[in-house]
Image (tube, rainbow, N blue to C red; front, top):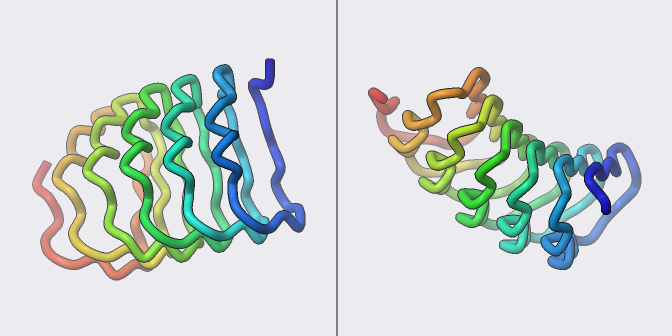
Length: 139
């Protein structure tokens, strides 16, 4: 049963197949440094055993799916250097095992959700080079 899938630094384009959400034991998924575009499929939320999702330096657009909040075991979530043009979903605040969150250089808009203050285990939070507004949450 597939647990580790690394497809970094290739010439992959197109989208992440929704069927990728049918990999029940997948723990590490790394697709960095490709030409993937389209939206991140909502089926990504089905990967309940995922510890690390690394999809930086691609061409993803659209919203970060709220289903990322279902990734209860995730420790590393890296979506930097994409074209997401969306807000940070408040559901990210329910990722209590999260150690590293990198959403830098993704054209994020809106405010920083106060729910990020619930990430008690977070060690690294990167939100730089976006279009965020408002105040820094006090939590």
